[in-house]
Length: 144
Image (cartoon, rainbow, N blue to C red; front, top):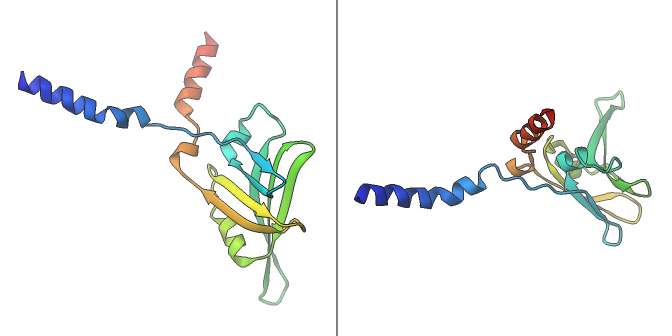
């Protein structure tokens, strides 16, 4: 009887862990033009039903021909044809921040009145990765 009680207690203790396993946290793209902040995760934007939604950043590097590399970076977000923003920067620290963005990142950035990027952040965590199992199950259900 004690063994059953111990097993039951262990199962109950582990229950919250199993309930949170595989947690996903979609973050649709938002653009706050008044406060000049855009954010969202790239996966949610990519698979959104809104075919205008996007978010991301990029880096371009050019050689000036004399051992000097010019770095230029930008971030962009859009939720509708007339609700979009692109900011740019040559700040080496912000360019480095963009270099750390990965495929499943949450991206956030801010800009000033001249559309220069003033803040770039990202978070790459497992809950931004889509639930591939769920999508597969849905697809299998559609095949029936």
